Image (cartoon, rainbow, N blue to C red; front, side, top):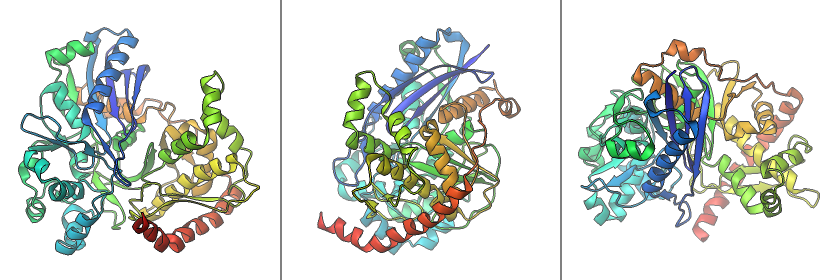
Length: 507
């Protein structure tokens, strides 16, 4: 039996799993960390936090598995959308923290692009628009606001490609990571757009020259790294790509026409398609499988799992202390209580815009909001309203896609651990929901990509793996009720939009 590793570098933690080539999960390890938010709407992380977490999770997984190093035949490494990418100097050392996807500081740069290049030209070449979400606007922010750092920068690398470089000594970028920078990537020809880069004053030399498929081998582990991790020198390291795309691979999505939502700290709800999906509200980049043919068209909340984590940390100190003393998991307690609250949380609606919002509303000034509170409401009501808010956000994404989404939607990520939340997603959207058997979607996608990249697995073999659970059918009575709540959800944002912008100016 041969074995493969899959490592996913996420926004709040890095996880590694080890599987055999029959698709059985053998061992796993998670290393957690935080995001730096030095100013409102800023979000940064030092890349060595990712590197150290990746090494620790790989080492612990290998050690805990008891599998001999020579039996472990490859690893693929996916990562969060690293926004600008990590600015590296001539010695390939980080110059400053990486401005990640969540960071929305580049408002002025976004306006400059729209005024001087224009949305029509952007869409024609890159298939994407202009917004602080995109990496190229963050790169322009650094150029404008940190000239000394700009002068030092030799190269920008995404998180997973930086870690791969540190493990192998080789530099490359996968198609999904390149495309997700937006603005400077030509989606028509699947390469850097010299025209756009010249127009923005970003040297072509600052982007990796080698663009690869997510199944390509970037290199082998160096002798020093292999010894540190307990693996074999030269073991192949495969590119993988953006983590939400890897999650789709882990769900068995290899063809056009399938809709899947990967929900972690944020939510990426995407249609995989080999045909253009019209609509400037969507974000698009090459998919992690057959990247020159398939594209990943997505929308979704900037803060999804993040707002539920915020609720736990901010509102649930009693439950957290009880858990530390040996009691039930805090989320389990909250879910049990919220399950007794009717659909709609008895008149509560939450807007989940805790870090502004990207697609589909594209509004950095959007604010998290709770509407409808009364003295009759409890913590359980508010918690359920938070769960419903993320489901409404998914419905927004589905509406923005505007395509035939099939007979059901795939749902992956930490949210699938909650039976209540899975049902809420089905009830709010009106679609049957199908979840994976194991909560390791991006990691499983990495394992699959590693297997295909090393030749140990084929698409036909992977299709036989049992990765999906039973369908969760919507309660249509609840769905009708949620239709009314969704209308109010949309109306609240529209009515408060001006006041939200005013609040931003008052800070």
